[in-house]
Amino acid sequence: MIGPFPFGVVLIANRGEIAVRIIRTLQKLGLQSAVVYHEVDARSPAVALADHAIKISGRTPVSSYLDGDQIIAAALSVAAGAIHPGYGFLSENAVFARAVEAAGLIFVGPSADVIELMGDKIRARNFVARSGFPVAPSAIEEDDPDTFLDRARAVGAPLLVKPSAGGGGKGMRIVRDLAELDDAVAQARGEGQRYFGDGRLYAERFVERPRHIEVQVLGDCFGNVVHLFERECSVQRRFQKIIEETPSPALSADVRKKICETAAGIARAAGYRNAGTVEFIYGHGEFYFLEMNTRLQVEHPVTEMTTGLDLVAEQLAVAAGHPLAFGQDGVRSSGHAIEARLYAEAPERDFAPTTGKVLALEYPQGDGVRVDSGIAPGQFITTAFDPMLAKIVVHGATRSEAIARACLAIDNLILLGCETNAVFLRRILGDEGFKAGEVHTGYLDEHPDIARGAAPDENVQRQLLALAALLTRPVRDAADAVPALHASLGSWRN
Image 1 (tube, rainbow, N blue to C red):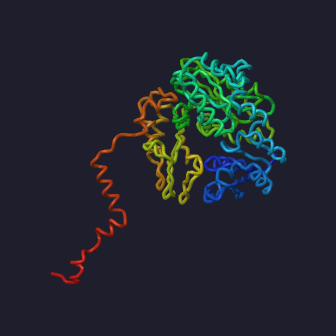
Image 2: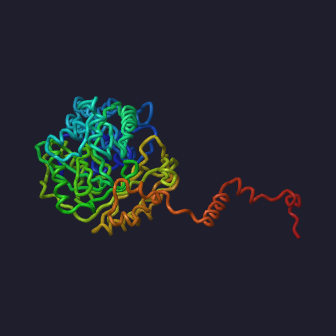
Image 3: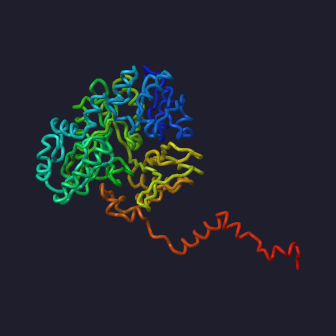
């Protein structure tokens, strides 16, 4: 049993499925949960499940969840002893982490200094390189701004130009022709300044058709660090992950051991505590450090499914000052797990965001199936937040079994009232390239038909349009109406 804890109430500075997921673990540990919520989330499952719910406000819904002072005040109002940031929002904000501790609360995450170090891509990259771990050949602007373009050209094409701050693919530009470098730098700088308030850039060698491999790490306050094996996150669109799995079908046992030990070594060198993820670009038998996310990852359930560990429980234990209950030899991985992200968007219409009221909702169930969700029937899906609605997670003895189970789970998903990417997910899982494990970060771009889907049968399309027309009240009323000439006959019968 994990514990004891120096706090009885934990405030979750987040919303949606991750808030619900954290509440479940708090309930299991006998701890009380508190959530903050904006008015648009008043009917959400997280608010209904929490022991305490504190309403917050702001100029926009998102700004409410970014208001650290308001969130800390909410925690103090219910005598919370710790704040769990989840992911996104303030989870990697060093200023917020320091403010939490200054208020006498425990921040469930790494130290503010480490968040600061790893949150700046340039500082993180330089730290990793100095520590003797592999990084891609690159040019960093702030080393010598006047020579940045010349040094970037010297690295050679193809290049990936990135803002130093932020993430999520914003500001990234791939340059395959060095004649386009100046324009790419100007565009990346503009986006970096607009999204993150930081226009600093760096350029690194772009690995063509790379795979995105990340390693889950866990450290405590006593210098102990373990890895919990890798996750493959190569199925992406616009640098956003869609499907994740573990173990990666691309890695040999030797490469797996090397990349996982490298991730643990980076975390150990940084004095890392709590849960974190070290991300790598992998291709042609080589891997390079990409970045470190100093928080729980969206895709952490696949690691939980294969290791049997509860990562949120481990986070809370570390935050409570306990040493890890196991060493590296005590971590085992069994079977194969896949996570598919259910988004409120229309892949067939260039991934346009979708909205609507949830009219019916039924998630798949069964052995090896887990659904992390933050929505409920009657709730309105808006464009105020990230479009992810739920995560469909499955586990099987083999990768083939996990794929089959994931396909069946998505087939059994029912969500009416808001268009989702469920059919798109099903097409990916059924794609021969995916089933063969031959994906890379540009795979969906190379296979646009997966997003578009097959062209609809014209006859079926006409029938569906006719049915839809008959279901609308004006058309139905017109079909049911008695013509005036016949109505004038009254109740006459022949």
